[in-house]
Length: 150
Image (cartoon, rainbow, N blue to C red):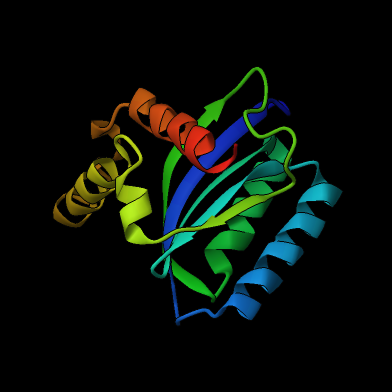
């Protein structure tokens, strides 16, 4: 595959409860690595769950995703979006970050309902990713950006 500009979004769960110091360490490491690899994105943490959007070249995104899969600080890594893009949605941020209470996440149009539906279907029918519409995830990402990154 050529080195196309990609956007990847995934959800995962923290292996253990993370305090502010641990979250800040993850964020700083991510920002340093992402600056080095020309990756931009958004990381959201809420009640032990992560939702991350990363953007960059195919080779950079694929390499980062492989590292994420083997990172023992989280588990249940589930890719919800992997698509070529023409331009970055998060081009100004090596890694924007928001730690939100569940009520804040539920206030994002489509966020809670989509992820609950997605995770329920993944448990009932492994590999059911195709049942979800890419536009739903893109709408959620847009709404997250508007809500948390003003």
